[in-house]
Image 1 (cartoon, helix red, strand yellow):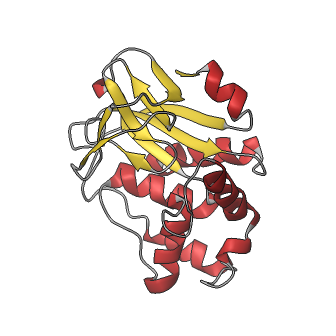
Image 2 (tube, rainbow, N blue to C red):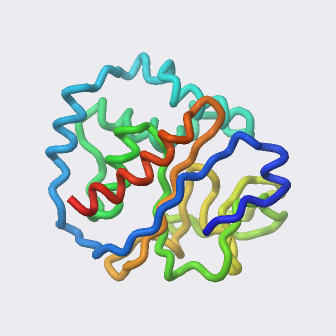
Image 3 (tube, rainbow, N blue to C red):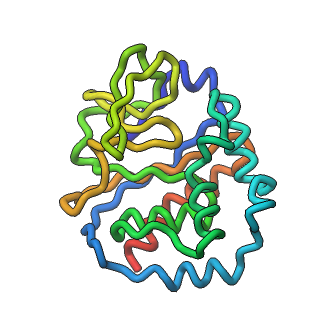
Length: 207
C-alpha cells in the first residue's frame, strides 16, 4: 500500500507506519463520540506541564528535532490535540471519519493521517521531497518545498508533509468512500501501539 523509499529507510530506519484501509460513509453528524471522550477524561493523567515528559510525546519530539522541526513551534499532531483537550475538554468536530482519527490519536498519542484513497494516483511512497515541488496543504495554502523533506507522495505529487500536514487533494469529504489510515511510529514507540492506533479508527467507525 505504501512503499518506503530506500533513502528514507537508510536515514530513518526507526520509522514505522501502521496502515489500514476502510470503506465507510462520511457523515457530518454521524456517530456520537462524546462517550469516548468521557472515558478518556476518567483515565487521563496529563496536564499541560507534564505532557512533554510522556514517553510517546518525548519520542515524537525527539524525531521532530532529528528531521529539523522545532516541536515547540510545530507540535506533533497528537500533542497539539491533547493540549487543546486539556485546555477546554474539546476536540475538533469535523465529520465521523476525522473525529474517529482524532479520538484514536488522543487515546494513543500517535499521529494519524487520513486520506481519500480514491483521490490518490498510483503507488504511494514515503520519500524525500525534491527541490521546487509544490504542496497544497489542507487549508489551501501552497508551499514550494525544499529538497530532503520526508513526504508521502503519489504519482501526482505530495499528499502529506510527514508527519504533520495533510494535503487539500486527498482530504476527507462527504464524497469519500475508501479511506486510507496511516499511523506514524518512530524510535521509542512500540510498533504494536502504532498498529493499535490505526485499528482504533476502524473500531470507532464500526461502533
